[in-house]
Image (cartoon, rainbow, N blue to C red; front, side):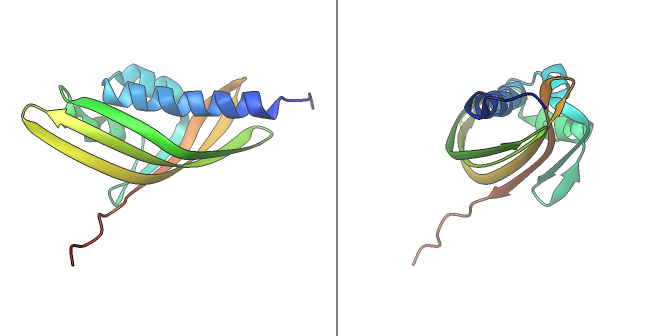
Length: 132
């Protein structure tokens, strides 16, 4: 097995996830498909989704402007599999409505024909602390 630069691979994995979010938030549906493995599964909002389910899930948000920030990104790479954990904070503006989101997320990526693809992603909403 060839020697792989671990830090460079971690950067490649993070770039795929950032590209995935960029594609999702700009409604570049083919871009989403291109970044995901054929057997992609997403756990989001209590639902299990494949790529097309996810695209249908985000379509109602078309026209919204989203600014997101990935924090506490931790990536592990072993051979052709990578996994990551992160916190994703986003501000979505749709007309006059502004929504702030905070998610804890994890993903598994698999290298296919030399390219990292998102195989599994899990997003859990961080609930704001209750007012006392």
